Length: 98
Image 1 (cartoon, rainbow, N blue to C red):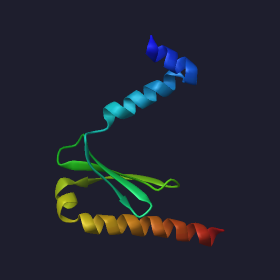
Image 2: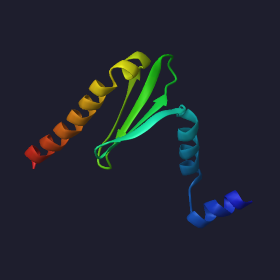
Image 3: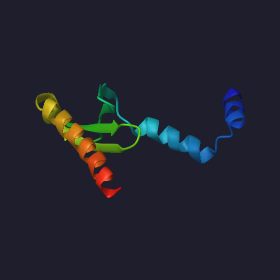
Image 4: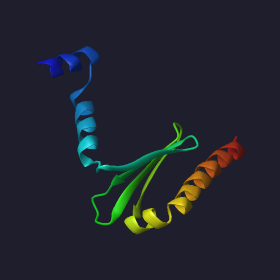
C-alpha cells in the first residue's frame, strides 16, 4: 500500500517505474566508481564474460562502452586519459561550432 501511495504522491507513470526497475536489474554489480575531474565514471560487471561496462557522465554529456577485464586492470590509466581527452575534444568542437 505504501508503494502505491508513493507513486500517486509523485505522480509517477507505470512506464517510468518499469524503466527504473529494468535499469536496476540489467546493471551488473558495481566494481568501482570514481571522479575524473568533472566526469563521474562508474565501472560495472557486464553480461559478457571477462567484460566490464564503463559509464561516464559529466552532467552535459554521457558516454558508455565496454572494456576487457584485462584492459581495465592493466591499462586503467590509459583508459582514463582517453576518457578525459574525448570529453575535452567534445567541448572544444562545441566551441568551434558556435
